[in-house]
Length: 320
Image (cartoon, rainbow, N blue to C red):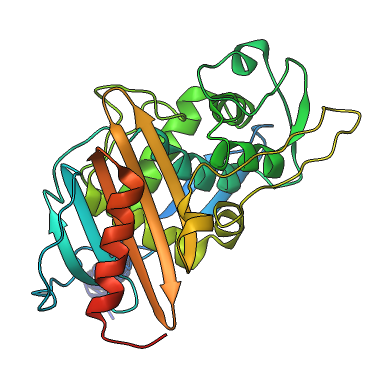
């Protein structure tokens, strides 16, 4: 072989090697930008110590309740400006009025506060109550400055006494206002509550603290089927919290009269402020049927909810 032939062979071999390397690189590059499956979103927050994250799987949002035409019954007289009656057993809307109208919801807000508190901490975790939290008006659990109270006991005062002191203690003790409110709004988004916003954990009147009857039905569905610890509290007439080295005795009593006055009542929460008027998120179970009544801006929230629940159970045409 001549020198010229040898040189040509070397050049050709070099070009082949370069081409092969380029091809391998192209394959790797193509692989790196190929489509991939995005994991299901999770709620991520930092705990109080700031040294770990808590992940809560996202619940499948309910985009729409199927609408039924309703039973062949006279439409009841309801004083509430906005209301919704839902049969959770088949996710059907039985009756409603202005179900997507934005309303102040007062202390119904505290249900979201409770869900978030259980995401950010454990029931047995202790919260040290600040003087600021203990002075929150007007409804109170009865907390004192420097009380050391478990999250579980604070939830009882939050949901039964509708304690604004308990709401602030949880907000301050579980990451502070910014983080806590962010998680409240993230939870609402996760549940498909598209016309809901929170800017305080107690439910004080605010232009940035509101929801709708429809969104609250979504919240009720989530809590009833996924939050047994909350349902245990809101279904109780009263809870006795014995005194210990950290605090005195508490006896939170349910402000939802339907718990004792309506057969089958299982919760959930009352609300009342100047802007919201009288509000109630109520649920009852008879047989295999669970009815949820959302009553907002009412003249008599207990009567309205009772009438709606009766209407719903009558509509099912079942015997109990």
